[in-house]
Picture 1 (cartoon, rainbow, N blue to C red):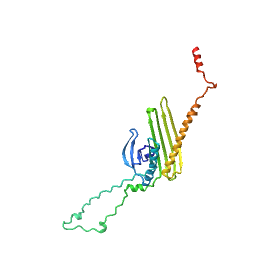
Picture 2 (tube, rainbow, N blue to C red):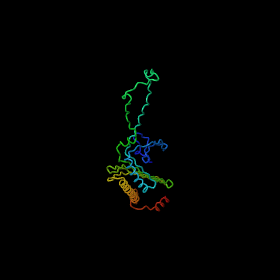
Picture 3 (spheres, helix red, strand yellow):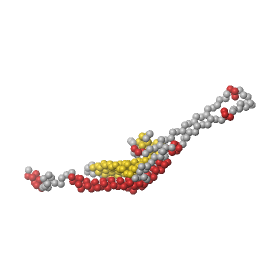
Picture 4 (spheres, rainbow, N blue to C red):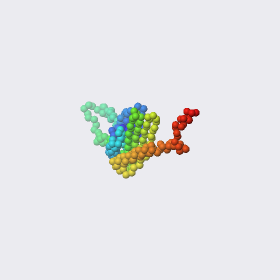
Length: 261
């Protein structure tokens, strides 16, 4: 389960959704714990499209992320059904004075058919499924991918986070890739970078994940090239290869001069 803004329930900001299990939980940020599980109401058609996208994303994550996880959230959730009204208990009918005065062997007066027939009760639809199905289906989803690698013994850590809005109606994918790495052996070097992604022509879940994979691969290759260029050119440009007079310093002569002085 991924805790992120896309999984936050709009009417209950302290509760987060787990669409995979169709449940929502209260999340304690201080204790990093879940509690108070409750059923999550989702449109069946929305859930079918969401589950298909999640299956494709899970296969991609398992192949390309060593310790990655993913989750797919619908863009919106139907409001939970209102509780069915409680019908009041029928009141006891007290005997009238006329009935109380009748002898035991005399039957009570007959009632007319109109009086004997009760008024039809109003039918209240209390099924939660009917309320959820009345809500239009959603085909816009948020795909979150998180991959963390922690290796403090060798003085480095890293995190890759991707967040995409997948619109299967329009066939578009929009999102960002956020990457952060930290090397702290005999120093402190960090990389924090972010890239916006825009993809068109993703009409199905399989197409969307395939195009996301291609975009992430292209970004990783670009980072590798940037690192190579940084070593060969960028770092060298931070310091001159020769002093301003274009001659190498004779350190032996400098040492002799310092001794003689």
